[in-house]
Image 1 (cartoon, rainbow, N blue to C red):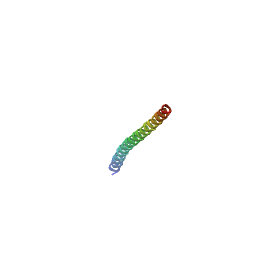
Image 2 (image 1 turned 90 degrees about the vertical axis):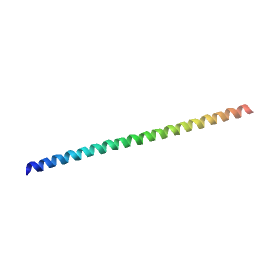
Image 3 (image 1 turned 60 degrees about the vertical axis):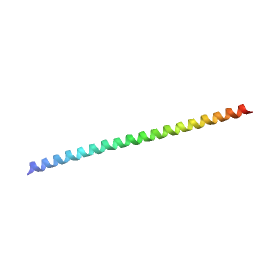
Length: 67
């Protein structure tokens, strides 16, 4: 009886450990995807800001040459 109980506890611990590892791996994957999405959003925001700055500079040059 003690051997069967020990075997059941060992197998239970191994299966829980495997499940935790899978959850950790999936959580890490989700975290990386989220970080990638945030980086992409920041890059798009920076590109928009740069485009706006270039457009404003072009407008100033145009206004200066019109006078």
